[in-house]
Length: 236
Image 1 (cartoon, rainbow, N blue to C red):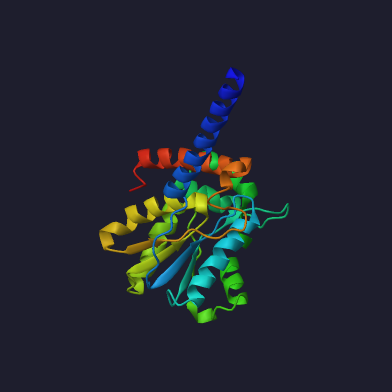
Image 2: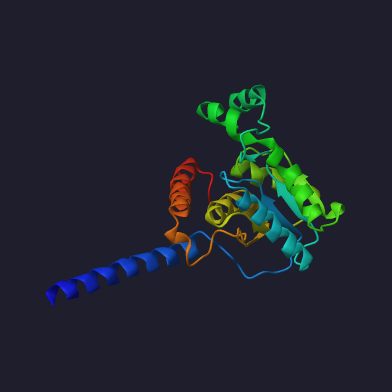
């Protein structure tokens, strides 16, 4: 009887930990605000090695556009992590120049030179959005950013030039929190209103992601990056 009680108690504790973990991640990572009309939908490049993450972001942005939440989609990012063995990588000289002016760290060059695939950047996203039925004139691109801070800075320049003040921010669920904190840090001084809307990736579900070791790894990675970039002053 005692052993059964201990087993039930332990099982209940484990279940509670899982439920709390799911609730915490839903509330703190996969951010979704109440939608309101905006000037543009911002969608970020990035696969983390899984093309479904990128395709999900594009599909979500296109759906929001088709539902009339904004008249433009802005695709941002120079590259995504490769998903094939034959990526079109950023030239080594470009990476070295970026490191020389502090855009990336020198230690990141070896990995970037073999995995940063520019064929999965903003141009690819634009082509996909058009293929999904978005008019070409409604899909803009920012093709130079090398990380989330630059996504925010370069998109801000585009927004200012077009006199846009309200955006819907779309990225992968595990990346939404860090993306928001970065964009808010950059855009808050300019009064840009940000609505969060994490993408439907087809693999991530708010109530079941925790059971995937890959998704737990992604969340752990984001926690570490948030801590590191907050210490650098890059986050709100």
